[in-house]
Image (cartoon, rainbow, N blue to C red; front, side, top):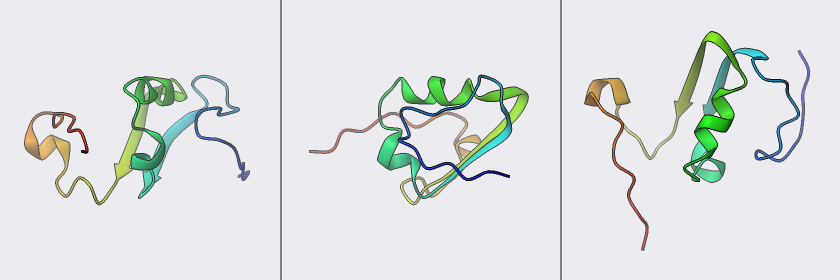
Length: 74
């Protein structure tokens, strides 16, 4: 295992490098652009798992049946 400190929008990894990516209480700070999630999942190997835990989403998306619509903050 290796620790890397980097900016979340400039990740120094090859495509399909990980079996799993987990973000705990952080995605809402760097993943707000519509293009970020597709960028992030390219680092997953085929069949890889993505886990995101955030206080902004108190229920799992699979329980809702859909990804909730994006809401704007005013």
